[in-house]
Amino acid sequence: MNLLGKAKDLLGRASASNDPLVDDLVDALGSDAVKVDAAHRALYAHDASVFDAGFAGPTCYPETTEQVVAIMAVAEKHGRAVVPRGAGTGLAGGAIPLGAPVIVALTKMNQIHDVDTVNRVAWVGPGVVNLDLTNHLRPFGFHFAPDPSSQQVCTIGGNVANNSGGPHCLAYGVTDAHVAAVEVVLIDGSVAMLGGLEDEPDGLDLRGAFVGSEGTLGIATKVAVRITKNPPAVTTLLLSFDSVADAANTVSEVIAAGVVPAAMEVMDQRITVAVENYVGAGYPRDAAAVLLAEVEGLEAGVALDAKKISEIGRANNATQVRVAATDEERALLWKGRKTAFGAIAQIAPDYYLHDTVVPRAKLAAVLEQVYEIADRHDVIVMNVFHAGDGNLHPLLLFDRTVEGTLERVHAAGAEIVRASLDAGGVLSGEHGVGVEKQPYMAEMFTDADLDHQNRLRQSFDPVCRANPGKVLPMGHSCADIQSLRQTPPGVWG
Image (tube, rainbow, N blue to C red; front, side, top):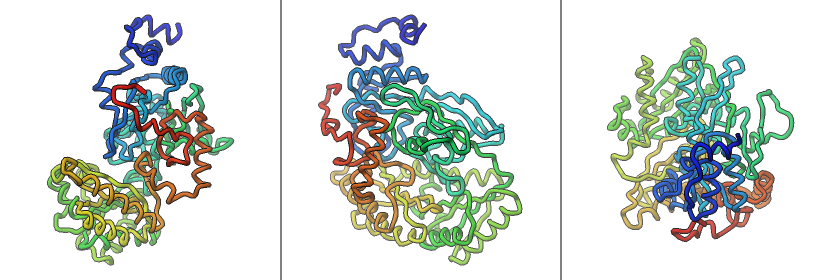
């Protein structure tokens, strides 16, 4: 019996919805897998960003590749856009639906299909939670290296969409380095396998083009991820400083000395105190900045690297160098770092977490600008960032109920982006462009660059119905449809 027959046999045809699109989706998936109520539409109208909510159409919960194919066929029939959706933890507005598209929520495609420890590859569904994968791999002696701060809830599909990073991506690389192949359903319903398990697959690197495309090239339904062997030895250090500049300079000098730690994270005093109040991780409250550094590998090499980091830190005025004595102490230090964003709720109800990258040598100078920009706009800023690769994450704290505050926050954010670009940096290290960074794309890329990016997009999706209105700025995208942002309340599209 085909998919349509199974759905009708198990669930029967739902009562007429007065919307042919919804009726066709129910026919294909069954009534339990299609939601059109106000609660679902409100839930999927936004992501974790500070940007205005969009307008969601019907939400579908597929469990198989075949069901995603069916959704694409129905969407094509009705000329409707589709937006893939993971856990909704994105901070750049990439999952905000524009123009009442069909929402394809992939959370039920959460199976770990196969783990091959010999070839170090695991096939997983896009809805697998990042940390769940590492927990599943732990008994085998492996883990999934990309570890975003949201790893307890973010999904592999979302990591692929945004080419996510994390503290331990300094040594191991971001998501792109850990994806061997992706099964993708294209906008016309065809299924393509991008990449492969060979060391050098033939042809163009379409896998590389897809990773980081933010849902604009199709929907990932299976991902072959490379898994990493757990290191034999790990040492975690906590260095304290009387200035953020000293911590930043230490990071640059460590890398210049040829030491590449697994992770190097800097937190300023405001966020350190907030974390201590929240989880009691053991951070010094009186330090202007702390540097959390971790080295992995063979025991002898780890000891040498830890010694070198300590020496460089002291040469840059570190007031304290502490080495985690136990696994429990190490875990607590990392718990503090990973819960930093949740800790700020005790200070303000809202925050805008930025994401830019600057050259390591200019970290200290750009951070000084960040503090000056925030002070000038009367916004509280906290800094916690992936210092090793120059990935800044200024946290702008505010209360959106106070009139005029959000405008000041966005103005400060715009200046931070431009300061990063002026320093030779880039728009995003891991959060993606979404709607947040669209206004700045033309400041980083030439018209020719943007034209070629649009041509790539059209080669996958000629009609531009896959997550339209994202990434490429107006005037450079085949998805320039103003009505996407003007769907009247109470109308599907």
